[in-house]
Length: 212
Image (cartoon, rainbow, N blue to C red; front, side, top):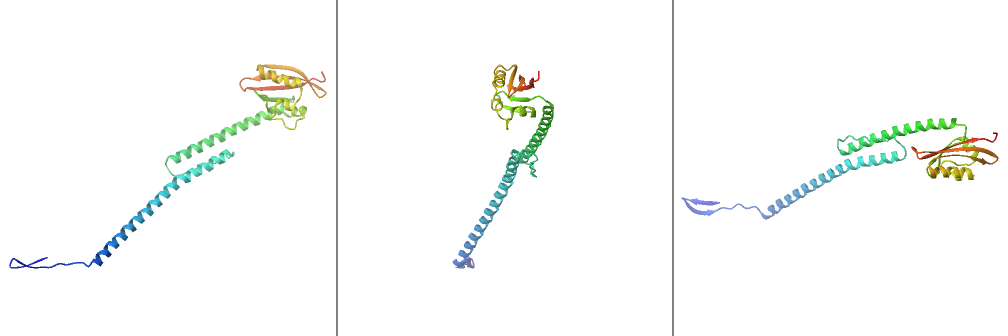
């Protein structure tokens, strides 16, 4: 600062801060800045972790539920509290599993009804796919075939009879109907096989005519 006497400059005065104090202030400022940056970094990492958890955790739940459905557990559900796209996906998944559960219930019910009808048929009875694999049979057919395993086997593996095999082979080739007599062991039968276009399957009923 200037010091004047009667308008004349007579002296200067100066106030100074020791260098050591300035350096301490700068160091403290640097410490404060580093602390602030560290706090911001920690908060950012926590935010990223929370966001990641909010996404990956529902996805893990969906994956686990999908695995349970694949294993046949149609009661598997995923319930989320969020209101984002992941929750919409979970809701769609729950709806899908419910529909599958209802569909399988209907199929099982129809299957039981069909099994009851087939069991009520006294004559040997089989259903084959278009390639000749047996997909359904009744106890009467199992009795005349004597095979330990029937469903899932090809027709020639179950009954090794020329007339039986040729009848089914002709129906497969011509997609029509064939009736033919045949002998299995010491008993005589009349077989009637027909192709069902709507199902792409073959139905055969075998009537015993030994006593006729």
